[in-house]
Image (tube, rainbow, N blue to C red; front, side, top):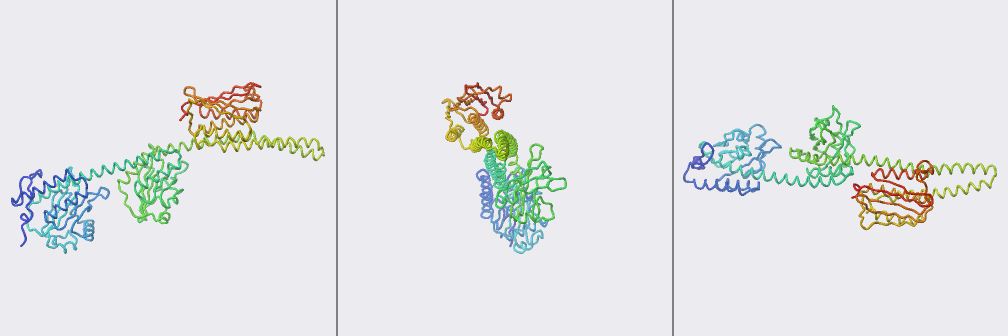
Length: 579
């Protein structure tokens, strides 16, 4: 004989605010109160979601005699309630239940929408259930009730138990009250988990952003961004592309992950009729290879070749300016969630300035490189081109003299050719030596300078003495240090070529906020005004280049020289360039 529902479940009665007032059956009143009290304590003590789910199953199975239960929680990314935990029911049946729900017979959603418990006395007679479920649990009863917290239904519990005949609205109040207590506990755990996840993501973003912003080399920055995107979303490949201002394309500049280099150099079209146009408008793009009829950012052949099933592209904007895209790819099918999109967007917000700084730095370095190439071209023209022109003329004259059999004059010209080529050979060797010893990134500026001077003495026979003020600490950025080294090199080259000096003194000292570097020799000296007005073109070019280099670092440059009294060059470097 079937039991009466109220005898099988002596439920907790509630008033209109769902607060408990008394029990329907006094026989089990204390046990039901004890259950609610135990659940109430769990609300304040348990903060781990899995522990709460296990605790809920323990209450339902061991204290209420439930045979099977399923706990559903709201999944924001899927926009539906999904099974989070179940007991007493097989994986195959849970899959059948999900298929039935998707086909339109969704009791879980109905319970959530109405915020009310549902009781079915005989499950086998209700066609809302899959036939396999009805056959297996034909004589069983069903009850489903909402999990409520903060006036929201965060989940639903479905129970299957031995059959109960009658149903009373008040009887279901106990489960609704139980659902509120369990709902609060689950909601608290989800909030704690969300906060912890956000904290971990913030820490990861901080470390990744710090690593990215530590470099001004564009290639290094883009490689770090691609790696960060792959790491944050745990995908197979991370990519980053930049908008090509010369055309309506985004070029993939860097990739991270196995075979990611195959995507480097690919173009994403962003013109008006291309799928990539949505990126310019600030929209994300999600692609799935199994949806071949849908538009894709990349060719299907490219994606199939590397077995890419799903990909996500998030645009990068600096204000209203479209800069590029961060993209992640997965070989296994993946539904990218809102949280994934937000995480990549947060990465983009944090690194966009680093990318722009690196791009600007690259442009500045490119401009500086062109300027340096122009200086080197002028130096080569000064020393090499003019000398080669002189040699060519002398060779032609010598050949004519030999044709005329004027061997005496021809021999004089040959001697001049030998002397000129000897000087030119020395100049070329010095130019190569100077270029090879310009990189101050190898270490401390003074260490690099001392090493260079020692080797210069050995090669060119000058006695060079370096004097550093003990109170001075000199260290510059690599760019400023390289300019200073090139200035000192040019000064020494002028001394060797023109001054006929035996000794050179190089002094460094600090005066207030400026670093002073002087290069002084005991050579023949010259008239600086006369040189700059046109006398001695070779020496004039050298001085002009030194002046340009000093101007580049916004320093001061002066020359003190008189014929017969040597020369002193003074360079003053402003404090803003001192590290």
